Length: 346
Image (cartoon, rainbow, N blue to C red):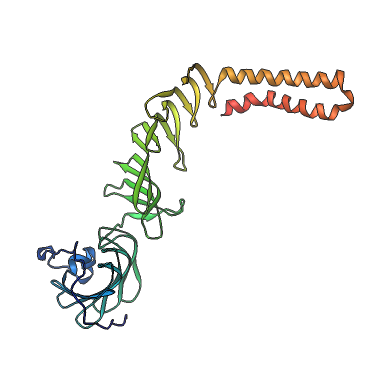
């Protein structure tokens, strides 16, 4: 049980009370004591009056917890730092953080009898991200994710992908697969689904979506680089969840408008029939592994020519330097022999 924090007096009223509103009809009848933490802490513990100095404030709480007291730090006239709520018996009810006037950060919430009920994080006053609920004996009864104050029981941590969480909807279909940080916030690559079908992939930082990477519409995807459309066409998704350009598609220039290539793709590369525009040079022919077939044929013939040249130089001109010439000739011979096989496997 947490020891009560001693109240302080002698503060002037000058704290910033913005974003702290409460409606009495928000309280639902028949709720148990734990259900109050499904709501915003600002609504359940509305501030009615403030006594403050430059460093701390003592706030009186109104309905539905009239008589409770909030003690919180102040910085530049705004609530900032550690905050503690005590009941009328000076028993700690909640410990949390203010950041520049908003309730954001780690928190511990307690039963009215003093036992720890919840350990996790608050965002804008609501339980959010990774958290744990406990019974009065200290046993964990829920360990998972929260959103807008409520548990997300359908969200589970994936075993085969480190730090990734999968959320299932009420229809038993995947809603999202997201990489999370230790706070349970989206951090990294997230996959979002609509009716069980992949809808978009985006990158997140500190629970904020920073850029769209892919958008999907059935068998067609749009790929974005630096928020500019670079590809539109068919694709495949690997077991590792990696998205690869494959099938018919269009590759755009950096402006997202000009077409650089239109045709077949395989493993993300030009492969098959396609038409490419490179500056003033237009190439309309077959491709293999991202290279025009005419170029590959030229390289193939060149390898054989170099092999023959080096072999003849060794045999007719420099027989005493046979080691060097044999080694080089063997390299060209190997490339000429196995190069086509490697390209076919591409």
